[in-house]
Length: 168
Image 1 (cartoon, rainbow, N blue to C red):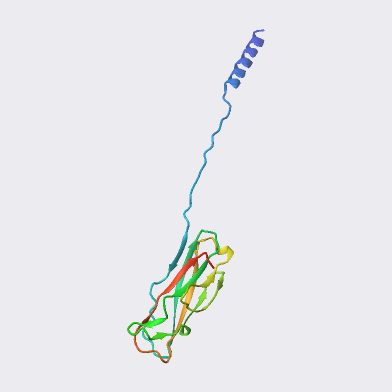
Image 2: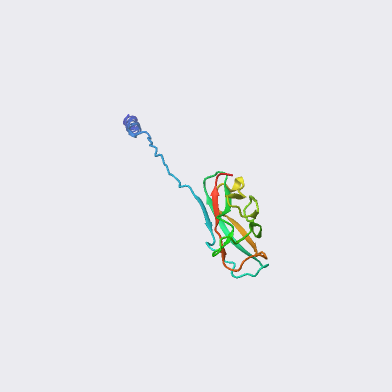
């Protein structure tokens, strides 16, 4: 009887411990983060200097544009010039657009090559896969300049602008 009583007492004690243990409870933490937008075009140089050329000479130079974006939208790279290559002393003397052109390479999208225009003109159209390009898409613009026979001696200059845009 003592053994039965002892066994009953042990069962009651262990049952009491089991009932005394708390039930599992949990709590939630909501995690938020804001990621800054990335919308950049970085150029390999701010100056293309063809040096001194003679009438009829042809010269080339390259500018590398690295486009970085995480916007996941259609994007385009547009090029334009502020004016024709213009003589720095006599602004009536210019090198025509037909003598200063570009050819693009790089990227998986579509290039539209040709002369530089006064208004921003789409030079490159990104593919769907390039819409999220935080690591960078490397696009090379090869400039081609031919000095026309009627060019007046002196220095000529203009500014080429690269614009990353979501507008075609």
